[in-house]
Image (cartoon, rainbow, N blue to C red; front, side, top):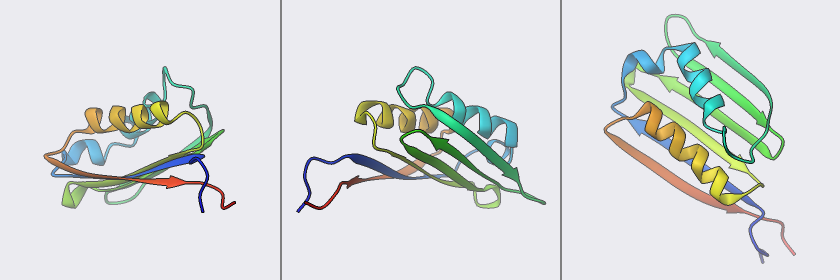
Length: 118
């Protein structure tokens, strides 16, 4: 039995995105770091890696959990997740900021409420 959720985990996919955005290490790092500005989410560390010939993977370690991203520019596809045991509105705002910056013709966003068993 779950008590009030103490974590919100958004699983996100964006389809038919601009290939150049999905292969741009600097753009993606800035997008994900900017996504938590003006929120209560605090970045402790970030790491982004550019694959050859294409693709980027990255991670933001948050004081309340994490944000991760993986791109497949050749398929115009990005998958990312935002997990935080912090403020739900701020967690959702980070998701919305990423989606609006990256764009895409369609998206899939799922919410998993996480909590401790009592």
